[in-house]
Length: 327
Image (tube, rainbow, N blue to C red):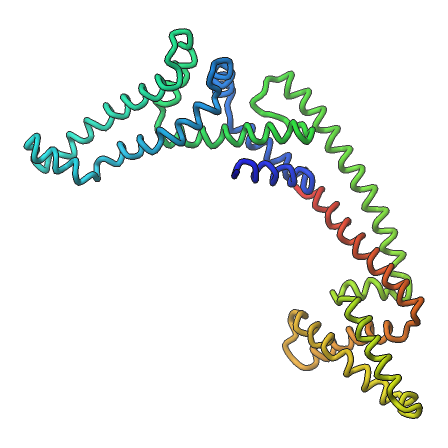
């Protein structure tokens, strides 16, 4: 399940931040030397692949090896040496130190034999035993490196991305360098072209109605909430007498009442408001946008809604495209 999640995460990374994915993939491939890959090819021609062997070592045999190497601290073993072999305290650790390598070698032989028991599998057996005879930390790191190597290779093949593998042979690296260079160049060209088109369209929107759509987006205000407040304002205005409805002071007071919640919510999200003067500047900023919206007729408000949605979509696409060029 974890492998599936990581696979999906890498596919997503290759789509959203392809240059970052390329760099990661190249680093992962470089960690697996040619010798280890050659051993993998030998094992992959047998009944058990390198992946199978490494998984068995990690899941089944590593816990046993760790138990053996921690025998220095085994109280029951020390007690058995003292009671059954009459070993003095000064010689117990020396005896345990002599026993541990013997037991480790027995486990390594047993592991290799459990993977390849047939006489026709002499080479896979020898490669497996050579792997198991390395220090445990080295084996653990090689398992991790190879698992990630296989995962990245699978994703690279799936998404059609080529990277330069430093461990590949010279001619292969030359081909990879050419192909990867073309892919990156094409990516940069397409993204740059689309970014330029987005910037032109956003600039056009920013010039409409004093950039009201862009200002609304920049303040991170919910336009639907503003329209709802505008509707409540119209209803309340309709309930006033004709004289009161024509009074600028009454209309302004009504506006402030219906937009109070919007202003309060906005002020709570504005960073760095430390005093009243800064709060007043923030209120003026949002009021300039709200008042402009309140003064629009129904047609203009609908047009603003379309412009706002389009501006938001363009901004998200622009950010997504910029992420594709991050390294």
